[in-house]
Image (cartoon, rainbow, N blue to C red; front, side, top):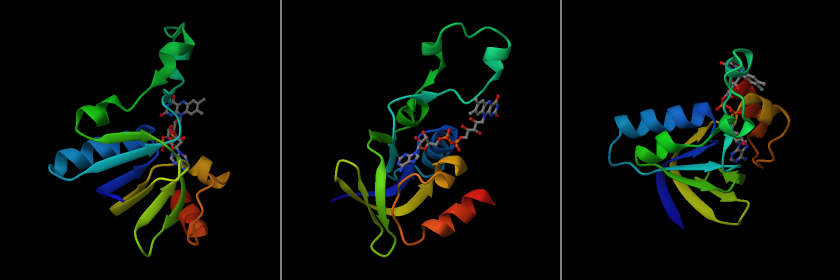
Length: 130
Ligand SMILES: Cc1cc2nc3c(=O)[nH]c(=O)nc-3n(C[C@H](O)[C@H](O)[C@H](O)COP(=O)(O)OP(=O)(O)OC[C@H]3O[C@@H](n4cnc5c(N)ncnc54)[C@H](O)[C@@H]3O)c2cc1C
């Protein structure tokens, strides 16, 4: 089983900024980001309002800053977490061990049930929403 110092769940703005900042402040630590989709949408309506985003393809955002900082990225969503053993399982049945785990899965996906199975899931909902 592969082991990482930090595993980040989610590759949106929260995951990317947390990852880049974490790597810069902890050089030498191994960071992994697990995400659902190859590219997400740029999370901002302003380019549409200003009419300078004329192509939907230009609205795709990947985790390039995190990769350039030295992070590893896999498109393989997390389906279960075991907080006791500090391990998690992904949709492709891969298992990873972590020292620190970052939830950057956004409150909306958590509220809608982002299908992560854990006994502490209701607690995670609360912390997301506070
Ligand atoms: C139409 C629209 C317009 C907006 N306009 C603006 C704006 O102009 N300005 C502004 O500041 N904000 C805007 N927002 C809000 C902004 O999008 C959010 O604040 C921002 O995306 C939150 O970032 P995040 O990283 O926390 O979550 P997200 O961007 O939602 O990222 C969470 C990621 O976690 C992934 N994930 C979920 N479950 C799992 C799992 N089990 N395993 C792995 N990955 C998982 C999801 O696929 C997703 O990629 C807008 C939002 C919308 C919908």
